[in-house]
Length: 192
Image (cartoon, rainbow, N blue to C red; front, side, top):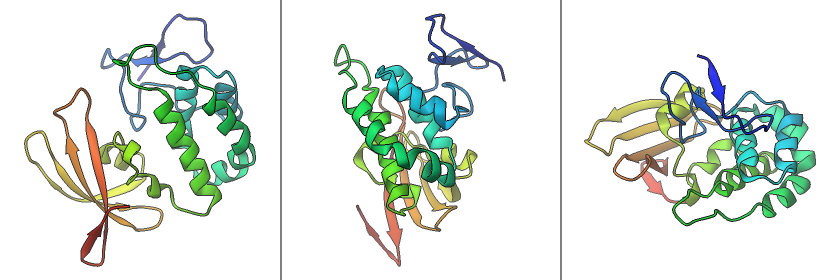
């Protein structure tokens, strides 16, 4: 699949999927923003303090292995936090806030620093765009069952890293798909 870029002059501008002729809204897809950035390019993306370059860098963080995050990004966490804190607000309330993705990426780096699994992000309120089928495509979860309900599919998933189980309810009735991840353990369900 070939990716094309906007001609705005930035090194890794927001990219579009040539196959689907649109931008994909989630970080867990094979096409869309540039996800094969090195840790140096990710840091440079945050350093620009540009919301969209930081968003691209954040999407790339989700694709990195835990080991690379631990070795390359955890030592720079304080600087990345400062860059993310200085990102500007969206120009209008109708736009999705690009800072959400950067804050989730910082959360992932912090989770790795604390020795937690990356799946600990799934139950956060702001993590509603992590779609289970996309996460499975990237080997982060395994879908053990799927119940197809119009506009609101339900999934049982298991983290491939730590084995934690989740119940996920998708909702496709909003402007973009959303997912509610609920921790499932020992016969009862807890919300983090």
